[in-house]
Image (tube, rainbow, N blue to C red):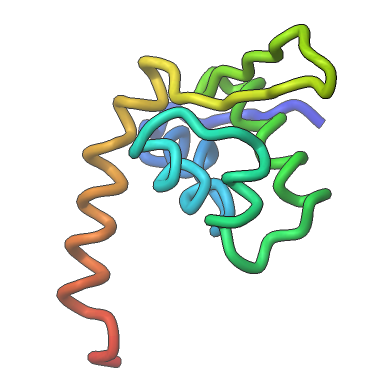
Length: 105
């Protein structure tokens, strides 16, 4: 099913990072290019299937780059695009909010 959006820019941004795993994947990629196995170790609790699905969606949405090297075994690296890097401030704001309010419920 294709994504449809209202004119709301907040809704559009939320749709790109709409689930827990995408945010955590982006957090990891903000520190630099990562191989698939690095992401499986650093994104604790995610299954291989869910990681792969989220990486594909982030790539389709233009948030990350996927680079495959013609080696045996194949090496795949993920990095942020310019659009993905532009989410840094959004994620940093979420971090600040979490630090301020986590545990105060």
